[in-house]
Length: 171
Image (tube, rainbow, N blue to C red):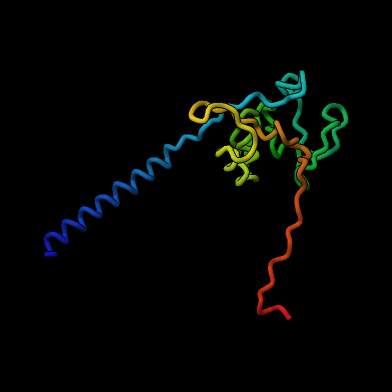
């Protein structure tokens, strides 16, 4: 190939690379998270909206056993956890992600997915949890809390096994 053709090929390749990289950047910046159609969370009757009782109530961030209301809730989800790790202290009708973003209870899968990322990906793909609807149409997903009690999950953490032993280290 002569020099002139080589120059044009390199120029064309550079243009294609610039267009592809800029379109990927634009797509990433404009990516809008998908909202999933879900039924309402399974609240106890009369308990939501939380603001009906918590409006104007001072925020107490001290971990303790609750004695007046919610005394049936004992947080055993994570060691050292407290209500405000997930619930927003300033607007009790919302949940709060680790980055401070507020989400509705209907979007609680985003909260759970912060720690349970692989499960969230499987849930979105329909591999975990219950999903109803048409195979090529609208689908309704069940929230994590429809099957798992968030304050004391049914499935307890499993102690990891030790790493495998290398064959050269076996005596």
